[in-house]
Length: 284
Image 1 (tube, rainbow, N blue to C red):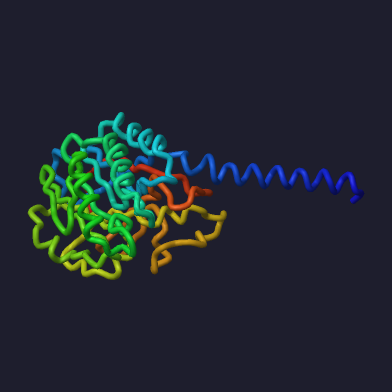
Image 2 (tube, rainbow, N blue to C red):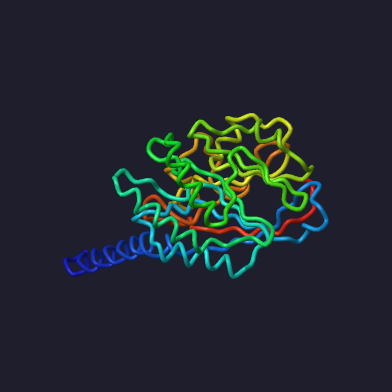
């Protein structure tokens, strides 16, 4: 290779690298996918067969997630008029500074665009909603209050009955406040779907008496996934829990959302998502 060819090759590599970086930093983090799929639920009431249940997760409203992107994403879901809307944790990222009122004001603006389900709008908290070190109950109370003001009923080890379907909301695992058994005691119907922010909760919490689907978030799908390889950074102990449908055991199946927001503005091969399920009568 002569000097001129070497320079051309180097320039081509530099251009390719810059293009790849630009895609991963500027395009894919804001390239939201609306995922549509069926959700078979055992004992589903006939009136809910064919109804839509949307899952939104991991908004991570903060100074470094584009507010316009978040509101556009929520408006896209609102236009679909889902029957039930669920949120599976991490409304915001509680940054380590003193501008707490600014963060709460930002969250209020974002959640003013949150779609309201025709039948119910429900959510749970994630680890970031518990502030520093995931243990600040005061932060969680403020976040839950903003969500409630925005029309989202926040379930903290509680059950909401929606036309004969129990939506079971488990509090956050890392906060130390998750209590599945307390929630299950409030069951009123045979049909049920659970919300649990951290997929590790499927292994680390008791689930006796529950069969069916659990909707989770937390992982962001790893945000970056090399082709044919697992994502190198995944905030769960169980490395099977990445994204999409995961069979936990004979009785339980996870659906892990890739989430809407991000912690670092970079995604590759892991587009952000909002999921719209069509409820079907089934064996799960």
